[in-house]
Length: 315
Image (cartoon, rainbow, N blue to C red; front, side, top):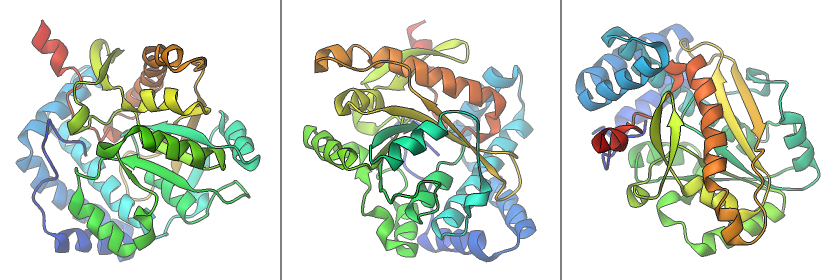
């Protein structure tokens, strides 16, 4: 869950997260759902600002929303948290991932041919289905390849600690979003040239880059998205795919996950300055896909950040 401003994960002990991980991997589904409901009551009562942002978002998607809608929103996130631990223990199977009639064929063909790419994902749904499947070699691509996720490691340090304990190799390829330098782009270019995949969220506001934003219309109002993912895309000069991993059912543990893959139409070429001019168009294209799926699955939006706040202050 992305927090407001510089806020880190809610105070929690490592043993509590280890218990959640144990529940996710070994308890029957009906008990997981009950425990998720109980956990949700606690956090729903505690996180006042996140409740407010949840209602802002849901009203934009649904027209109106009350506290019970916001509670269900939090419950969906609790189930997604359980799923993250479930995925990273290798419990998912490729049969739980349902591909669509989109650009997945082109993506698989590209990887089969040994060509890398950049995936721009979001905090809508649960990308752990895809990421963990690749880590456990459960993909439709016959050739082995590696994922290089770019994530903000400062947001959920205790959860990261528990995940690392369960699967030590998980963090070998992770790059911290707060430590991206020109050398990082060079490193990634080399890895992608070897046929690997870099993954970055297009909706993650990093503490260190809050002022590097792109204004885009989102859900009927101007919002401010981070520039980082789109600037990186311009620097890497590789094919770009927007990927969304959404549960078929908003509620209920371990639903079948539908993977939606869209190759970016925005052309990024020429000198770096010429490519940089494509950042707004690339961000706009990403946000149009994100908006479409948000309207279909608003309860699976796990980015509790007010993207419209700056716009409101300017009015």
